[in-house]
Length: 355
Image 1: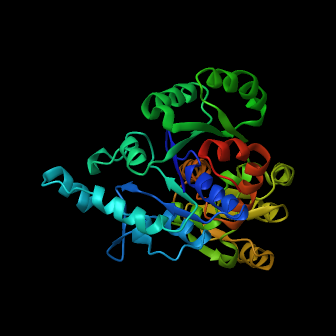
Image 2 (image 1 turned 180 degrees about the vertical axis):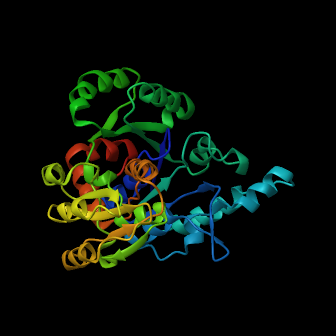
């Protein structure tokens, strides 16, 4: 059996997407695959139990029958973190090893999702390197494109994990920077015996939040079109122009959210005549009934928020940098990117497994 520990140098690097997509690929190659998130710090509660959205999504997609508690064995809720701080501290190592033994039994491959950084886990007595050593895992590092610190994060991970680190995935690389990364950064990392197993270009769909995510973040009411609230929003435009120029402006971007005041019926109707995923109406101003009727006919959700336009734009922009991966369209697109830009042969060789 091979154990692959997938970690990152920062949050929102695409680590969960890598874990699930690799798991699906391994399954297609005929391997029996298991998934775990060994250590989870500051895990929220749901119905009195530690809950992690990524873990439950992986359990569903990879069709794992084990209870979620086995897949997320060391999940420190705020109360458990308080216990560790105040003492006596709990020894979580036996719990981790017991769960891993159960989940890995009979499987060819275990995909282990690391924490949000190399610093996470010390409070539970299980920092990343200790987990890797305990579970006899090899490490794959996922780094989101960042021209200043990306290389330093890679070399930090190499210094930390040593020979256990088998490769790097460079993720969300802007397409104009792909050639520079291939000709400059990749050779640099190879000089330090850090093979780059994947260089994944930025894809607009993968950073797209759903309409329902935006509604939650804005605490907005969905007036119509709630049946299409899981549609993905790939762009954002603000409707603050004249009605005469609105149509030309809105035609520039497909699959967009249009943010405008609730009293701008002319702007709203112009947006509805283009490829629009949702209207976001600010100022808690209820729209013209004609706008609602037209949006309902087209199946376009209309969101009403009491925030002003500036704050609405700021919140929506934030969702494009950290949208959830739990969307079928995103899984399909990410799987395609991996097939095109990831060296599975080198990964299999490093792990010592065959298809």
